[in-house]
Amino acid sequence: MSEITVPEVKNDLSVESRLSSEAAVLGGMPAFTDALCVGRPNMPNRHAFMSRMEKMLDSGRLTNLGPMVQEFEQRVAEVAGTRHCVATCNATVGLELAISALGMKGDVIVPSFTFIATVHALWRQGISPIFCDVDPVTHCLDLASVEAAITSRTTGILGVHLWGNMSATNELHEIAERHGLKLLFDAAHAFACGTKHRAVGSYGDAEVFSFHATKFVHSFEGGAIVTDNGELANRLRLMTNFGFTDEDVVEHLGTNGKMSEASAAMGLTSLESMDEIIAINKRNYAAYGVALEAIPGIRLQHRNAEEPHNYHYVVTEVDEYLVGMSRDELVAALRLENIIARRYFYPGCHRMQPYAGLFPLAGRTLPNTEALARRVMILPTGQAMTEDDIGLLVARIAAILRQPEAVREALRNCTDSRLPPFSIDRSA
Ligand code: T4K
Image (cartoon, rainbow, N blue to C red; front, top):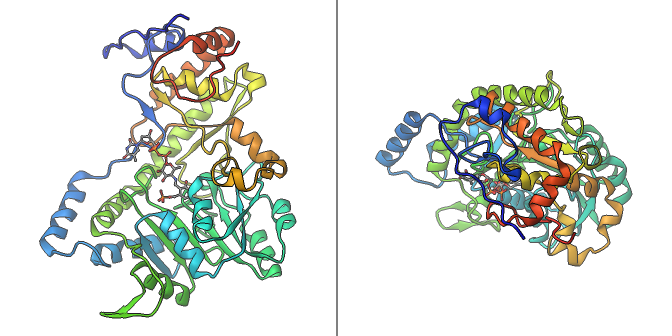
């Protein structure tokens, strides 16, 4: 077994020489010296952030619904077009609280093709996730699958606006009304997305955003529940603060789900750069669109330029028959270029524990989920990426795909520690 040795990278390599170089997996120079990764945090204006931190330290108010959290809630509600916003320490806790506050129990319908937090938020409260398939175009809940899954035990639908694509909100609302179900949306990816007429935020009974560091607007860790229902918002507010209604009066079951002032300081500063970051993401998406046209087997998910979108996830699908290698082989070969593409959300929640053990046959009714889990590849974007980076990145994809057999053989023999642990077929 021969070991692939990756040549030392030189910082003075010109774009031209890197563009013409062979794939790193086949002995060429890695395309990038520093890793490009999906989810690299966008950095806000440092001065504005530091001055908020100084203000916070001077005030002595560090948490428990301080002025910065209140301002952050107001800003988020404005973007979402909702009457109420309750900031939380992260979106996972936000989902758990919203699920509980809405009285969901028994069975709740949820896509399997999502980040595991969506499903854990149900199961941790003793609610059975009923996995439904997704639409192959939007990657959001498939309506026929939802209809077919509803039984007398169903109490709600938890839809996900995956990648910032809107779920079929009107149709899901109609189904929920017809069956007397609660409707909640995991909008972790969908801040500042929506239609020309209505932003994501006011659909269903409530929606939950994530402001995790890897999101385009972030507060280190953070989330927010938005709703137009004042009574629900009041209940959620109590629940994020242990259920306290007064100094020593607890009137509701609750937890510590609060956002800190430091997080809100970051969130407010990040929000000030929101339009600029969306413009960068949009420019990057367009650059990917142009560059990927040269590679027929890799399809970039369509975005409607007329509708608001944050362009935060660069979503591609790899057709292994057209490109001559699996998505996993391509992702692995890209790691040697210092390009950290991701297989989100492989293998689907139904194939992760504890759900794989609880629902071993779930995959039979999830054909689109299973296919997407094998095909989807998310590529890096955000503030740190330039159009030149994207040109070079796609050129390396092309270089890797030019010699599928040689790449497969090289991967099989490769012991580089940057290779991901998954499915390099070493058997042949
Ligand atoms: N619902 C959906 C649909 C979600 O996607 C998520 C979260 C949630 C609910 C729950 O939201 P939160 O409770 O987290 O607010 C990341 C994020 O941790 C997670 O928030 C996000 N979705 C998910 C899609 O991505 P990982 O495990 O992929 O993250 P990780 O640690 O691999 O980081 C990604 C890359 O970013 C790495 O290559 C390194 C880089 N990075 C990351 C961090 C945190 C940095 O350069 N600096 C950093 O500080 O989950």
